[in-house]
Image (cartoon, rainbow, N blue to C red; front, side, top):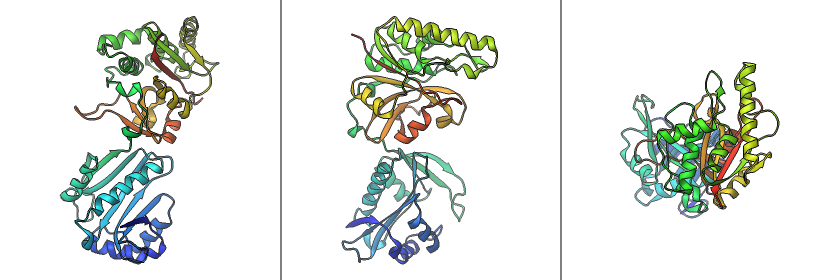
Length: 367
């Protein structure tokens, strides 16, 4: 069996395979031509062994620029090749190609009555995402599946992978919850409950933010960790205080600046390391390898479509994909709470506000 990228010479064979494999919602010959030529599509074909043999199967993967999500648009196997494991081989190649292209998540749709396809996807680690009504030409519903492309087997053996998930119970406590998860990775005796969540928030809050309660800045979170016996490295820009643009009242701006300056000064009197340079993905991966647990400030927009700063925990890196724990997420009981993020997507999300500020706190075991 030979699996390779399709070319324009495969157009007729692809159209013939499509005609035989599907009774509706077929890809037209003109669409096949566009897909093969498109930079955002990958068309994979399988043959019996030599370049001139008939097509036995094909798959189409789509991926937009600046997105860490790839989509399996189509997968088909010729009747003569069914029952020989070709669907599994094609799907495995789709997963590999998607990872190598920089995607962190692979999604697909399948007919609600296509039980064989659903078993195939579940066998390869896909989980049900949602249901789309009237998705196909004949009015049939579609089931959407997705698979994280995070590969724990390829990840460095980071302490951060031990972090348990703890979801925030209040809108403004993402920072304390992220810190609780990080501390629990380093010390399993760490208590994760609402009292601890609110206690940390009281210690690390900026007091004001927008019209509600204040969030937590990097210096306050690092100080709270140091006071509990952990070591901390803070990545934060010098100059104007963080989050100060989130309020308009000059008095609130003064308070935010005062709180940050006070936390920064108190932290400077400890063994904590303060770094004004941005935290690169490469340096982040190095902190993970060295036993640190990173808390990273991101824009809520990239994960939840909302405006505002948000703290997450980075627990691992497999060479292509970062794994993060998001305190705002609400994973179903018993499911993997980790979120897969590509390197490029991480670069885009790890900036907040008009000044595109970035911040991170690396927690590690104290001496």
